[in-house]
Length: 283
Image (cartoon, rainbow, N blue to C red; front, top):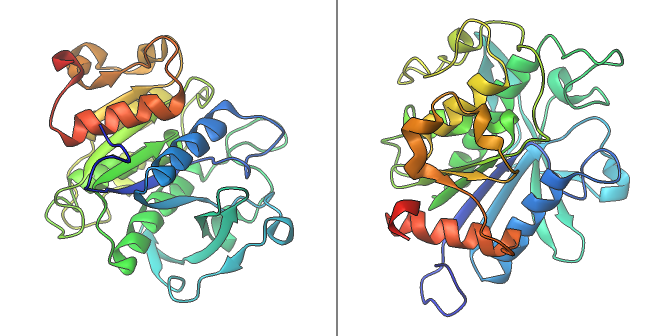
């Protein structure tokens, strides 16, 4: 288990659709739990990098965001079109840990996460997802920073495991990375994403056809794809494994928190097992 007593420290990359206190509204269990994970890893002395989308409702002045010039300016290919990437950064209050924000005038200027004023999914959510996942990974490459663990939270990060294990599997920064995907019930959406995500996701030359993504894909297909390419799946809501199409086939990857185990203890235990090459069946 990762602990302050260990001599070795780890590099942990968090890629999340939501991190407190930047969530919309007063409360989000997922955003709060992700922040707790980040804080635990930081308190243990591990080196961390954190990425989330810069939704239009995030108040840049109040949260003191500013652009990171050295990371901005990358063009991200989305459905054959180059989209300019802007990276901004701010520090989480109290713990003073930096969060990098993936920004785009095309995809993230609107003051909403995934739904319009009528409660309908945005018609370009598939391309927004692709831009975010690719933008986070390309930014890490530009940093020249090799994560030991890539921790993904929320369906909006679901293609990160796929890219790490296919396109980036031989990249010197990611070849040894372990991928963990956190699955939350409150993150679920109804219906399918518009567009052909399975086709659009293959812009990288070394990417394979992504498992579990059909012509029309919804929440179950996305999280099942993430689970397929991850080394571990943390089940952060009771019964949430029902949303995995192949749960019975990947039972050795599934981790639930133990009774009375808080978020920090849970994620620390899972990270330790994954880095030691163990499964939940060996506990």
